[in-house]
Length: 391
View 1: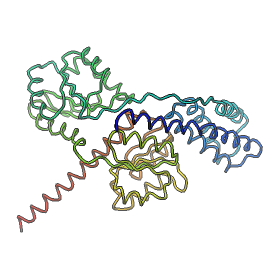
View 2 (view 1 turned 30 degrees about the horizontal axis):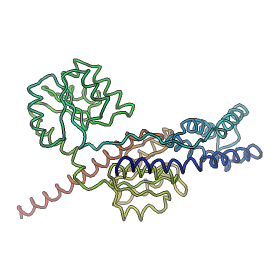
View 3 (view 1 turned 90 degrees about the vertical axis):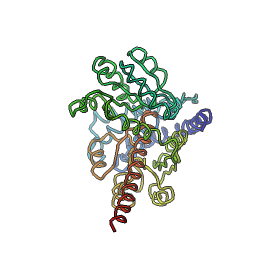
View 4 (view 1 turned 45 degrees about the vertical axis):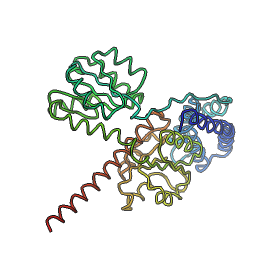
């Protein structure tokens, strides 16, 4: 999908969201007035769910203040025991929050600038190393496999390039990293803030567990010894870029917020994925069978059944025991996140989320899952061949 068409689709979905936002705020206001008249646990839980849903979507469509106020209101309501009427102080705080929330301006939207995600194979590799002879050797070996390799011997030039374009991969010499710790700190900070989706590989003349630990703690995704691991490094880079020439990744999205799930689906389709977006959890089995997804991305709080119940049910079925499941939810309750991981959920991403980080996290996990399936299939074939030879 070209960037202009992608931007038009995202703008259209955002315009639909903005059109219905006044109604959603009005519904919250009415429910709050209903509670003040006659407080019931069921109505309080319903209002909490309304605030939760709004908090999970508003920032995505350009309304961060509505997310902030909705989240605070949800938290205050959730803190009460079984949604009983809170003490006078909390009730007063809720009144103030509800007035602020339901009176938020909802203006006609302007286009939200969308930074298109450039596919990995269309980005250069950034190689940072003061050893020019090694760099020339590595560039020659990698040249047939990548679109471009840019070499940097100093931190300033590297920072300038990084500010203009994310590479498909950063190759960082370990000695250079130690000599200029600010460079490594800068990369780690960008990754922590979800502003950089490029993998970081360390290359080194020496190799030990202590050095590998140091590289991992610095945010490295791989560690390779220069004298012995060059072929392995090239193989890893080919694997990293393999997805461009393979079948598109298949992603099943489940969220009861129809516009939000459409927005996410458009983002993933914009980078070449095959996506099925659904909003009713009880229909999931049909879509799992027809799509055969590489990954399932879903919300935690949904009608009919919650995400933990649904994931647990899937994990009991052999066909989906190893399907990567990622929760994308506004839920920040550590207990709920622990419960999700306890039943085998692979990751827990919190709304609102940076779109570049969302794309990178989900696609990388789908990539690893598909690679694992390929390894299992290849090993099974080798085992069959070995048995045939033995027989």
